[in-house]
Length: 499
Image 1 (spheres, rainbow, N blue to C red):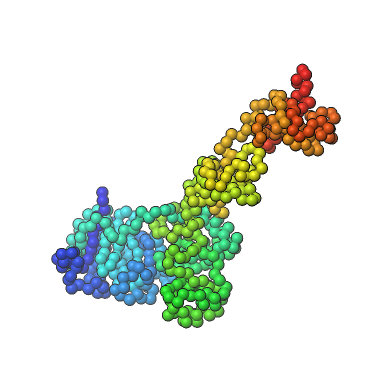
Image 2: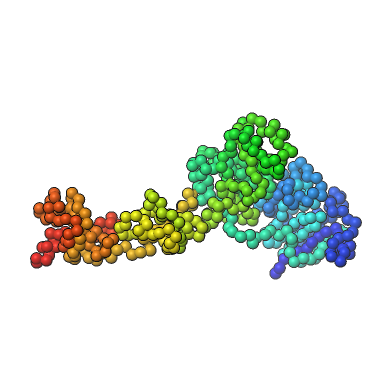
């Protein structure tokens, strides 16, 4: 059954023009009196009719949007008396009694700087919008609540949906702050890549944490439930240079670390710079971050899941390249076959392959089962190849591939030749014997004939018996694919032929 959604206002529908715009005399700001109380009573009536006595705070915000500007923001964002000054308890998913939820509705009606959705799963929701429009969603008709709302002098109207329902159709997958994330963060701190963590405990509100190898667990333990996390590189220790480089036009977010190690941020423009310089005097480090999302470049982001590991927060962080890599890596599994394009063949032998926008690597030992002089003998830049995923390292964000894993190991096939006599070509002489190519191809398999298996005369000098390029009859003694070794005997081959 579809939900029952009602728009509740103090605006008489009879006072609308032909375009549906309200043209009556009601003020858009709260009266802080009888009408405001009527709104709260109406919400309470719908909650009672729905059997709701507790509501969850969803997507809490402070200051900023949707601060509608009808009334000036107040100290504490209108939440003083409801939550501590640090807003402990005002977080996504926090459950509050109906009495507290009604006071949150009051704060939003007064537009004092705080906003949130109030919900009880799919059963009930309250959204406060522009100009004192309140939207109540229930899972039942609630006729008694509708009658009470009308009796209070308010006007309920049935809608298909609240315009403040969350947008759950955003593209991409939100990265959770799971164990893979913390392993990645620990690695980034160890390598000096990451140094600062921004904790978005509410939308438009952040706390900043210095990251160290030994202090990471302590930072993790004090984060707000379902917080949005953004990882940044270190601040600059040249605070004067950061101040001098501030833009002459427009606003920035200025982040600084004071002498006690406390990191703070504020938004400032050219009119604030003198006061800002005085405020940050003595700071040990700072950074100026652009406000435009496409100009900010954090390392990676995540959102905290609940204690059971499930990510229930609906808000999204702005994806970084690392986040997009994480999303792609989550689709890969060892043993999976992927297709990509060879991007680069490095001098050290690694071959880099673009697989769906992510660069994976094929180690030189995973290119082919057969001999080759250089990786370019096997692959070429621009070539499209298929390879098997060997390993997905979420911590280092690396993928290793194998080209040869999709081919049959010729040595395993050759194992069927054990005991057979074959004719090969001597390819190399070493003090302890001779290597013989036992397949009729340039990159054919090679086996070793030890001096003792070559002839009595070759115990210490194989060159006295054979030379490179000579054909040689050998018997296959053993094939060990795991150790990549083939053992051969010329003496036993001669004895076999003589028999």
